[in-house]
Length: 233
Image 1 (cartoon, rainbow, N blue to C red):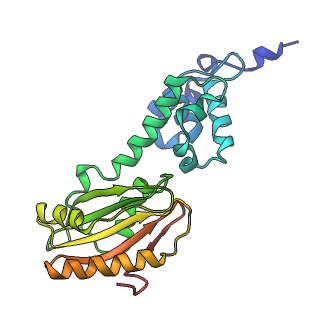
Image 2 (cartoon, rainbow, N blue to C red):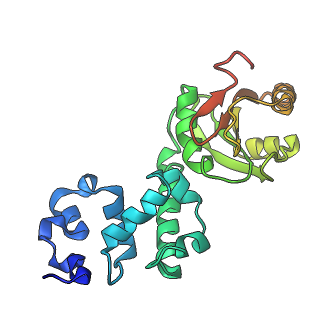
């Protein structure tokens, strides 16, 4: 009779095509499941479960939602047996790198033609945050992307959007138009009265120095709200 502890196979005993690293080489990165990708990051499991099984257990705890996983702290990840500080840091670093990819220099000359183009940039940056952050997206005369810039961060219910800081950044980068963006950690996509007043004030301030405020996006984990799309600009 096979003893219970021997029922959990170590990765090296798996068929080569089923091991995450070898599978990536043989079949390509898209063939790996989320659990297999995390298993590569953590490298090993425990005596009772493989790295893939441990990774599945972590994903089960967040209902296989990578956004929820990205919100976990080192301490929370270390609560899983088999995950130490180094493995927790590797997971967090990988998820953060994935977020940063979306605003790497490769996007600098992208043309912005819709609110979705803006959401594609800001959603990875802001959707997992537990506090509000306020950003601007700067554009040139042809609506080509100059770059995003974080203006401020605050608490769970608000942050400061200083018009002087916003337009100084825009002027320094020779932007002719900007798009505003902030997140709602609460998940509520609707703009508050303060959001509406701020947007109106910044739009008017921009007109006085010939920098157009084209839109204002609110981002949550589940989507985005565009002031321009809703006729609020």
